[in-house]
Structures are given as structure tokens and as C-alpha cells.
Image 1: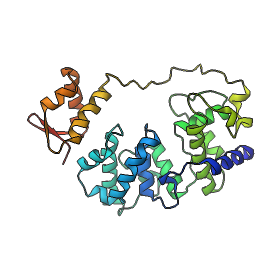
Image 2 (image 1 turned 60 degrees about the vertical axis):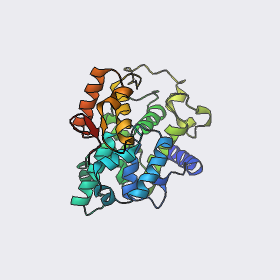
Image 3 (image 1 turned 90 degrees about the vertical axis):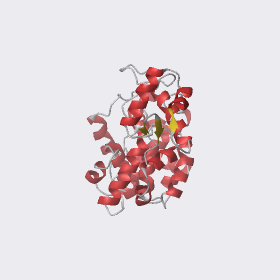
Image 4 (image 1 turned 120 degrees about the horizontal axis):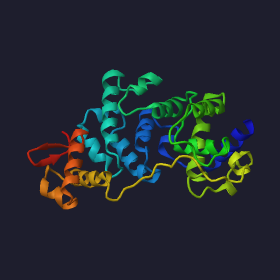
Amino acid sequence: MPTLQAALLRWYDAHARDLPWRRPGATPWGVLVSEFMLQQTPVARVLPVYDAWLARWPRATDLADEPSGEAIRAWGRLGYPRRAIRLHAAATVIRDHHGGEVPETLESLRSLPGVGDYTASAVLAFAFRQRLPVLDTNVRRVLSRVVGGVEFPSNGVTATEKVLARDLLPDDEGTAAAWSVALMELGALVCTASGPRCDVCPVRQECAWRAAGHPAYDGPPRRGQAWTGTDRQCRGRLMAVVRDAEDAVDAPALQRVWPDAAQRTRCLESLLADGLLVHSATRYALPG
């Protein structure tokens, strides 16, 4: 393990991307915002929204003091806009119950809206330098290949993965955080889901999957990301109309962007239920 850790950490020192939530001046609030935004969203799409968000709301209390509709509007086209509602709700709890400061315990973080085990661990590791494993998609894929000799991990995080990730952590808290983010970076830049660049991988000599001849994945079918014609696409189109409008919009404006009446109605009802839209008669708007 020391050889594996040293090789990866040397590579990370030389190849790490300069991302604002990784810089020394990043606040715990900034780290929390980044974790919300990066869920199922590429870094390139997150960066401009993140910068604008932190410029407008540098503290959790700044966001909590504004209507949730402003969070939805600022979220723009990042997708999965329920994350904006949950982040606003988390900011409100931080303001009302934690003195405006992001809490430093796993239990307190887990109690925030929209914060699960992964996000709580990431904030504690990256913002507070606590020695905790951080298992995102990239980390799970790297460990599955390098240690397990399998191309892809299972669909859900297993107890075995958690134990392995914990056992691999360096003893020093600061080094442990660097190790976790280095695993993420390797998965994002080199050990990618498709087209892994094994020839330039810094841990190729220790990789069990490479040593086994890169056996193809033969586990359960992996989850797809369908988009065209789905409710997700319909919801996105409807949200874009309302988000870009200066005032409430009427039903005909929504009909023009999605002609399937049954699907449009279903998606509008789900947006209302999620708190992403409000309506009066036949007009729709962001929550006030």
C-alpha cells in the first residue's frame, strides 16, 4: 500500500486541476456547494455556476436569506434542480441551527437536507481534514480496478468497499484527504469509465485489473442515462421557460415547448410537488 499511495500522490501533485473548491482558501460552505453541484454533473458545467453562486452567496446565511426561487434561477441549466431546493434548505438549517457555520460532525451534516453519507464524508474530509473515506463514482471505479481486478464496481456501495476504502487511507489526516481527492482525479482524467489510459496511469504496476489482462465486466447491467423524450427532459424544458421569464408564465407558453399533454401535465405536477414551481390558476412561477 505505501507504494500505491506514494505513486498516486506524486502524480496528483503534478497533474491536479486547479479547481476553486480545492484551493487553500476554500471555505466549508464552498466545499458543500461544490459537492451539491458536482452530483451527476461534469466539472466544466459546474465551474461558471459555482463561481457566480459563491460571488452572490459567499456564506450559507446569504443564500438562506433569499427566496428558494432565486436558488433555482441561479442553478440555471445544471440539471436536477431539486439540488438547488435542498441546498437552500440546508443553508436555512445552517443559519437557524448552526450559527451560520457548516457543522463539523457526521451526524450534524447528515441531518442537513440533501446531504447523504457521501456528501457528509466529502465535506468532513476536504473542508475539515478529517480522516474519512470518500466513495464517489470515480473512486469506486479506481479501487475496483486497481485492488479488485474488476472493470466496474457494483451498482450500489457495498460494506466491503467501505472497509477497503477505510483501510487504504493514509494515517495522517491531511494526507488522507489528498489521497481521496487524488483517487477522484485519477478516475476523472485517466482511469475513466470508457477508454482508460492505462499506458500513462501512475499506478499501473500495482493494478490488479491490468495484471489480469483487463477482463471485461460481467456483472449486473449498469444503469443507463436515457434523456431524449424522458420526463427528465420534459421537466428541464418546462423549468427553463419559467426560470428565464421575468414573471409568471401561462399554460400556452409551456405547451409550446412540450406538446405531449399527458406527459407535460405529469411533469408539471411533479415539479409542483417537488417545490420547484408554484401556480395560481393556469400560471406558473418559481417559489417566492
